Structures are given as C-alpha cells and as structure tokens.
Image 1: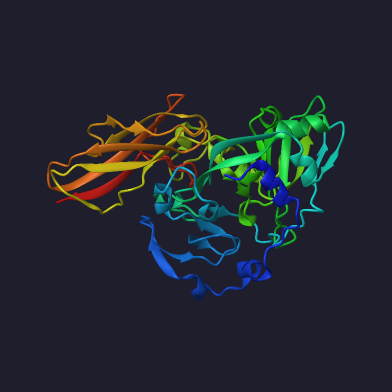
Image 2 (image 1 turned 135 degrees about the vertical axis):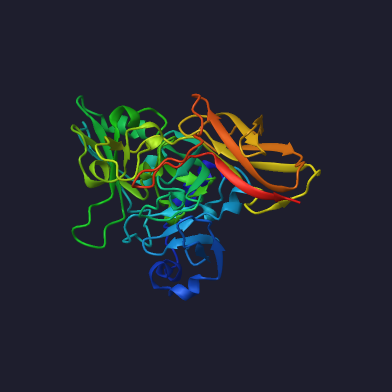
Length: 411
C-alpha cells in the first residue's frame, strides 16, 4: 500500500486524464464495447451483458449502461481477495455531465451554511488535517435488483454493484469543527462536480443528520486501497459513510452545506425511499406503506468459488469459500448449508479487516448422493441480524439480502 504521504505528493501535482480516454465515455460506439459477453442469470432477463475495457482507469467490467456510466464488477473478482481492486470497482453515476479532468491546484471544497466560518479548502489544506483509514463496503442501494420478482424498473444489476476498499482520508467531523457548526444545525448536505444534462434536472445532493455527520467515522476520502481515487469513483474527493448505502457516498465532493432545517430536495424526499418495514419488504401493489430514506446496509454473504450449475463429485471432499459483510456492523458468524438449508454448519472466518468490510469465510464438505443439490450461505452480524430466508420486494428494487442459493450437480 502506498503511504498517505506519497498519495499527497501525487495529488499535489496537476492531474489530467488523457483526452482520448476521457472522450471514450461519450464517443465509443456500442459494438466496440462488446469484446465479450457475460450472462447474468436474471429471472426477468435479458441475461447477456457486454464486458468492456473502454473506460479510463478501469479493467474489464460488466457494462450495464454507458451514459451515465454504470459498470458492474464481474463476480469472479470477489473470489480473488477481500479488497476489490480499484480498476474493477463498480461505478454508478446519476447524471451524465461528469468532468473528464480535474485541476487539483484550483480545486476547492466549500463548507458553508449554518456555520460560524465558511471555508474554501484546497486539497493541500484538507490533507494537512489528521488522516484516518479503514475498510468499508460500498454497495449500491439497487445491487442485485435484477433478481427482484416481479421485476422492477431501474438498472438491472447482478450481484456486482458493490465493492470493498481500504479508504484513506480525513474525518468529516474535523472539517465541520473547523467551520464551527452553529447550534440548531439539523443536517449536513453534500454535492459534487457532476451535473444533469438538462436544465430542470435536479442536482444530485444527499444529506446526513448532523450527529451522524460528526460521529468521527464519516470520512472525506482521497484514496482507496492506497492509491488515488479513480476519476469514475470520485476523484479527487468522495464521501465515505461506512455502514450506509452508496447513495450517500458523494463522488467528486466539492460542496458541504450545514442546514438548520430538514433537507427536502428530490433525492432525499422523493428518491431513494424504502418501506419502513422489516427488510424493506412490501407486496406488489400494496398501498399505505410508510416510506423513509434508505439508510443502513444489511448483512449479506456469497459463495465466490462455485458457480451455479457447477458439477461436484460424490464422495470427493469439496472446498467452498466466499465473502460476507455485516452491513452496519461486523460479521459474527457465517453458516454454510450443502443441502438447501435443511442443515447448517458454522464456516471458518478469515481475518477481520474491520467491522465495515468484507470478511472471507471457508468450509469443506463431501457430497454423498448423486443428483441435484443446493449450496447456501447465511451471515449473522454482530447485532444478531440474520439474512432472511425469503427475498424482500419493493418497487425500487432496494436492499436485497436474501440467503443466496447456488444450485449444483453431484455426479
């Protein structure tokens, strides 16, 4: 991992993406993206997606949408380690007007609103504050939306709209304290450098309760996995809100406003709402359900080394492994079932990299009977929350965390 000082040295220079690479965001024709295809087993279809390497600073990614970019991490990447490489980390933007270059010398982070002293911080001034670092999962609210039944509108993600990184930055609390939050502050609002392509498109902005914003964990990050943030993951600064969904993790963060009243902008009042029910679950067509802004991550776990449809040999020991995360807290236990959930056995947990990150798990079993079998994995987090056996449903396709099933054949 690069030291924070070397990252600071890199950021102190003018950073400009090659124009050819940046132009690729808008000008490449669709046939050029389809170097190969991948099939996502989505019940509502269509399953096939192109694999693209056409985006700057990104390796092979599943192309869900070109403009604005929506790139999914190929699922096999999650079997390679608990930290998702920067060049394979998922990408999701709401609006297509994204800067293709950032002048770090002139860049400023504004802090204003209900504060004693408005600030305009250069990157050098920001990075002079004490640094913090931790691992945290960044997961799109709609990750796995493509598996919702009945199908719902929106980006039809597989399970790759997530990633885990070691983030480096400064405490949001330190920045807010420097500005001086006035009594009566209610929320803190964040926006970035991206904009809507049409005049009446609502600027993408999100807010946190002031106490949450000042909890000492919310970070203004300038690095992930020891390197500068890629442009498409928020260079030069992004908000990191550990344990909360990615909609709050503002990319290209350049504006922080302290509010003395509740934020009623479109992205807080109308978009990203979930049923205020267990597992954000409701019935299709159900009315009268109270809705609240989406918030905390929930526990999830996956098998990463055995694909659906794989063939295992009867009487031969098999190793199975994967990743788990506890959502807004750590992983307490991971259980594995080789018989479709009829019996469960505790898996062995790997190194704990921090309560907000992925954690590796492993188990071994010997299939005894030839035929079809279903492998399952279940996470229990440190608060005692367990993945549900039945999938949730809501019209936005948010917060899926059902126990995952992997059908295999035993020969």
